[in-house]
Every structure is written in C-alpha cells, then in structure tokens.
Amino acid sequence: MYLAPLNFDRFFKKVFSDPDIAKKFLEDFLDTEIETLTILKEKHTITDDASFVEFDFRCKIKGSYIIIDMQQWYKSDVAQRFYLYHALNTGLQLETLPKRKILLDASAKQIKKVKDYRLLEPVYTIIWMVDDTL
Image (cartoon, helix red, strand yellow):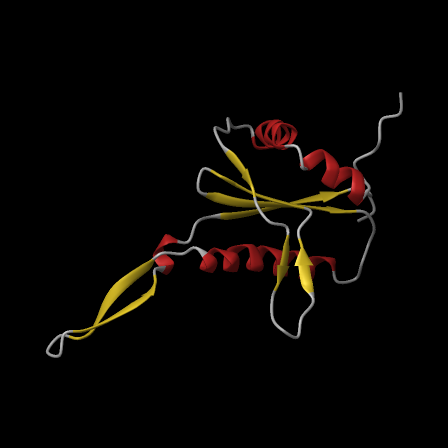
C-alpha cells in the first residue's frame, strides 16, 4: 500500500478536508481536547484589484481561528506571506463581528452602530515547513 506524503498540497488538503482527521491532528499538535471543530472557507478575495488568498486549512476551535499553511519549498517572500495570511485571518472576523451602539451626542441622543472590535477572537497561524532548509 502506498502512503501519500503530506508535503504535496493536493494530499495535504485532502487529508485535512476530513474533520475527524483535522481534529485529531490539532488535538495532538496543540495538546488540547477539541469539542467542536468548524472547517471554514479557504478561498477569499481581498479587493477588486487583488487576486484571491487561499489558505491550505482554516478552522475555528473554541472561539479561536486557526490556519495551517504547508510550505514545500523556499520562496523569498515566505515570511511576508505568512504575516499577510495571519492578518487576513484576523480581518475575516469583520464578516461576522457584532455591532455595538455608541453615543455620538448625548444632548441630541444620536447613536451610531459600529463593529465591536473588543470581540475579536484570537488567531493562530501554524506553518508546516516540509523542507529542513527552509
């Protein structure tokens, strides 16, 4: 029997598309018990001018957002790309972030609804480096 290596995107994504396997991997890696794991959308368009960003794996566990990116070979922009992925994973919370009311003018009783940034949840980025020379 041939066991496909996880250092190829296609195999990596196939394995992590199974919630049970992803859950067990993350429980072992993070040394924690996971009650619920929600696999989230992987492809996101940032702006009209940008192409899309595709996470290898993205999920939500106990109020925390987690992405895993598997890197096969060296690219000169690898660190910058991981910073962008981490920031984007935080920014994607804006899609579902609840709003709160703020008082603009007490005398006129003007109230405005704004995103409640105090409710942003933690984001974790796990980078799986396949090649030891990375």
